[in-house]
Length: 171
Image (cartoon, rainbow, N blue to C red; front, top):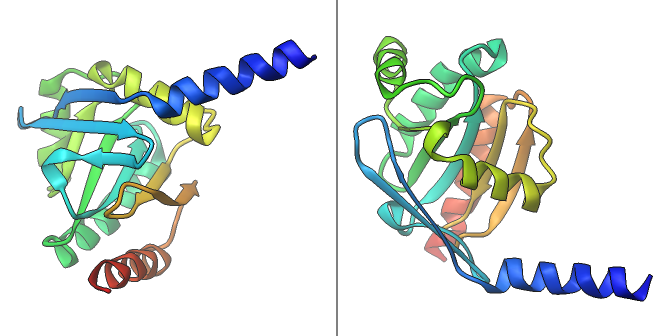
């Protein structure tokens, strides 16, 4: 039993003490570089912004129903907030994702999970996420996960949570 506990402690220490990097591209072919270290999860392209990391699927009705709400929220907070969506259900081609992006007039970053499998696995490990969608993480400007949303979240709750983090940023 002591060996198992010691092994788990060592694995956990290695996981969180080492620096991880995820170098991804969005549907517009922009680089999205994510660094994970003991201080948190940092999106280099969105420095000093609150991040909503949204794991969704195109065959998920609640995910699709959330898109207009997310588009509106991104528009309202565009200077200090960024949504990064990761399509995890269908592993679509970039061309398919671009059509989806255009159809729903998405104004935030979308990443194809074909290229983000390691990020998805990492998030699953640290949050105990079992794959149910929609699944969202609200990350503060310091890279700390502040709120985990499993399932549908209403616009008012999400906006209030974002505003709280933005107020903390200005203090």
